[in-house]
Length: 129
Image (tube, rainbow, N blue to C red; front, side, top):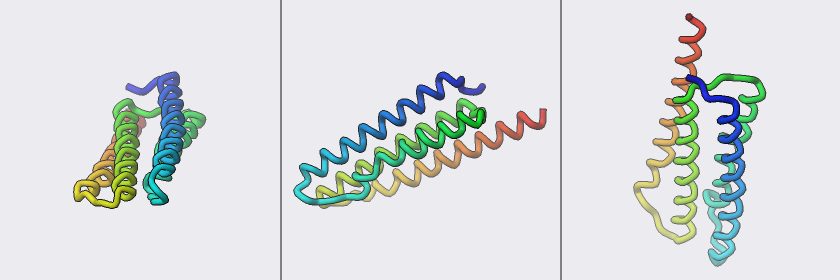
């Protein structure tokens, strides 16, 4: 199964909305952080903007069909990487660490890799038929 164009447009819109939300959230959070800056907090909005909004818009314009599972894994990876970046920013601003923070980029990368593998396997299967 492939995701419909209308559904993909909704995903793209939500990624742009999330990017704006996290940009404003990061600015407000750092406004009240007493001069402490974290690039993880400040640039967390770029993950849904680039990976969700811009990349998926390009794929939509080039009429690339994306399997449902690949798109779902990709969207989960974007959420996981964004939440991990925000959480790392909060910890940096607070001035502490957490040993579990390393798992966010690891599992986000695994989800991205699984999405790409699913996309390639589905394309190969469609071509071989």
